[in-house]
Image (cartoon, rainbow, N blue to C red; front, side, top):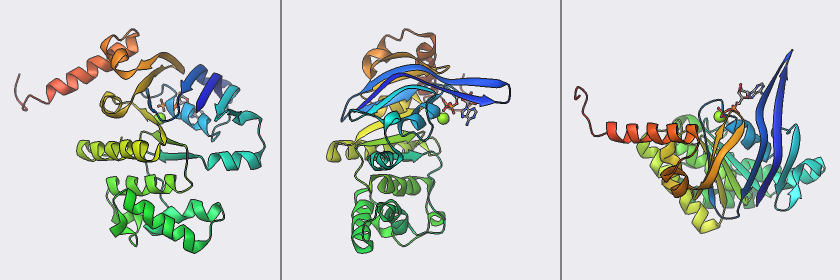
Length: 258
Ligand SMILES: Nc1ncnc2c1ncn2[C@@H]1O[C@H](COP(=O)(O)OP(=O)(O)O)[C@@H](O)[C@H]1O
Ligand SMILES: [Mg+2]
């Protein structure tokens, strides 16, 4: 599905250069739910934006379904991008369009006829459990509902992969669990590969098969979720596990307990 080879991204600002992603090598299999975890500033968003060339890597290869995306024409890239869906922490819905028209948007761009696009959009809204809101506007929806719409929109062009950048970070714990369950269902029903970027262990624990731990632009550890978190090797992974244990424990104490 995805193979990243020696992928690097540097940003240049006046005299400064920031190496946001450094020599990353990753292999993501078709059909899996792959997590990329790390603290803020680790380079996760930059890395995920390199996966669809929203950010053009400074060097290295982004091989998607056997093609190096760095070597293809803009026209070809547009075609490939239809196979790469993306959702964000901030949902990024179009405020002036109602829900069904938001989902129709990528279909219009892909040249699908209006009637056909609408039919597909309504089916997708049903899939994500929000068809009754089809005529509402984004401002009338809760965060969890907005993310459902964003997921429906991302699925409109039948992507092979769904990139999720902190997709549940703005949601409360119960809504987070519901959205993660939905992503799991989409993975199982439609066979869409899912790549989850997060700073939260509980997200990785809840749905990911494999995980890569990122710190200062590099992947410090990767493997099966169970193994990585049972026997963490890097300091960063140990800290993530420790924080997570601490959070889980603290749920059992009432305020004021010692
Ligand atoms: N467009 C940009 N211009 C300059 N620096 C950037 C840009 N985007 C990200 N960075 C820098 O790259 C580093 C990694 O950022 P980011 O990928 O957003 O990390 P994360 O998503 O893990 O929090 C940070 O130091 C950040 O300031
Ligand atoms: Mg980020």
